[in-house]
Amino acid sequence: MSYPMTKSCYDKLCEELSYLKKQRPIIAEKIEEARGHGDLKENAEYHSARDEQGMTEAKINHIEAKLAGANIIDPTILPKDKIFFGSTVKIEDCDTGDERIFQIVSEDEVSVSNGKISINSPFARSMISKTIGDTFTVKAPKGDIDYEVIEII
Image (cartoon, rainbow, N blue to C red; front, side, top):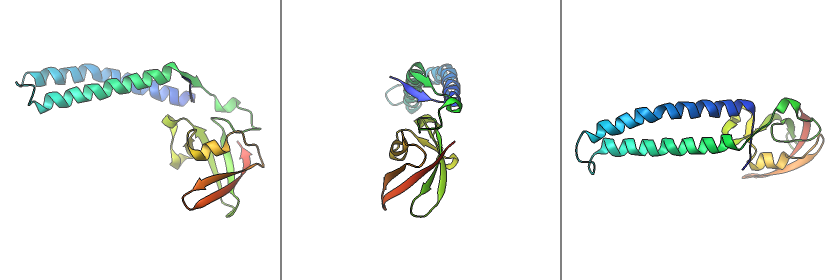
């Protein structure tokens, strides 16, 4: 499976993977120490450490799968005539005239406060393949909102 992501996201996931792998021996020590406390059936420390080990291994596997299928996109070389994954877009609310800037990124890069929205969000999906001057509609709880693409940055 292909996972589109920017280089910064790829690097961030590599760092997280490295950190998680360094946790393995620490967790193994916790398990060994907890084993020394006696009966494993009623040993909360042991079960907690085993749960931590399971969650860490699941995260490692998840990140390794993403990295193995990584499709690194460089937003700086994307064409500016159409909206794609990685595009930064200035849009205008057709009713209010409010303008906003968003970049379409992977789920691992989302930061709404920084204008980074997930490619999997309905909002981003509505923008994909649009060009400057195109309008699109986003279904919101308060009703449909129409936007116009002002600029592809």
